[in-house]
Length: 172
Image 1 (spheres, rainbow, N blue to C red):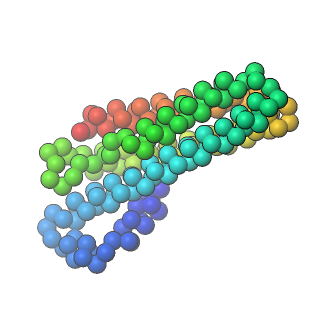
Image 2 (tube, rainbow, N blue to C red):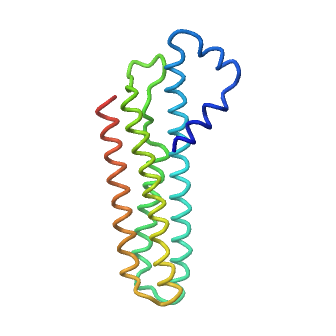
Image 3 (tube, rainbow, N blue to C red):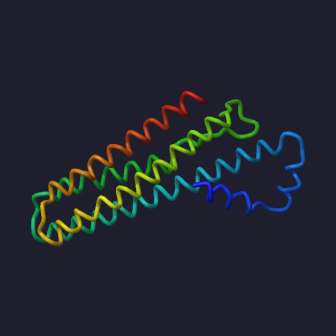
């Protein structure tokens, strides 16, 4: 996830490079860049979750044509994923502006960024957990055993997001 932060740093205009020479500005700008990286990372997580929800909706439609027994379970998973994607996209950032009264320390910013990086990893694992469901729907396999890992992974994501928000509440 550090590559996102580095991309933000290298794309700053010449004026900002000059302003970094001002006392106090460099630390402020570093935090601002971390906030931009956090925003990009969370937008990516939200987008990947939405893509996953869309994929599950497609699988649900495919299943509905043959068997309605587990359509509701897939629908619940889709709604949970979409709700989580929305929460992640619009959740509080881990940094207050330069003139704001509330400040988040650098160590706390790093911890929040690590939470987001871990969320992205869990989303990638969730994407892999969809493969058995896809195979079960297309090949007539055991849907229940394919759905359970998805439910557990979504729960892990929700817990991780809740923990992130709790940490942010304590430091701000």
